[in-house]
Length: 198
Image 1 (cartoon, rainbow, N blue to C red):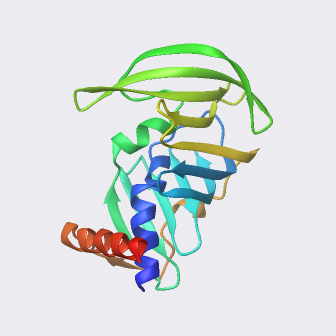
Image 2: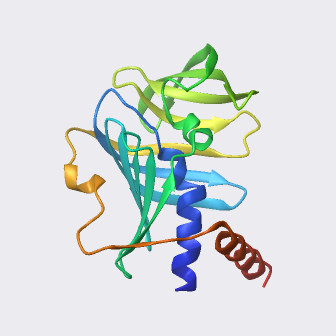
């Protein structure tokens, strides 16, 4: 159970990046994220304003139409519901909420796709931030998104466009809702930090 809870925390705080993504085309891809915590890979499915990421012990479903994120734990037939965090969602959209400026910085090939690299400046909670995006203009998908300082990045590989099964974006029948309050989250994060030091 402890390992599962660690994956739940990861799903909420890292895979939550895929929340609020709105794309021109439905697609699936392998999503690889790099940060100071290491590199993580997930399978991503997208249909309009809905997305699903699958990892080993947890599945995350982001529903912008309902403004929620569901983290499923298949082994326990349980799920957690969290509100969409627009701050973490910002880097995964072609058009960023609160966008102030978008400046093209050249053409690059990323994961075998021709992309335009942009420096995007946007405002969140009264604070200005910037990210890099590499957009495949033919399908309007941000193939890669990264921090200006290189501290994190997310890249889509093996992109396949086409309709996705609507059932992928629903909580399966038979799952029970679990409440995970902030004190519990703090305890889990503390436990994760302790494990990393051992």
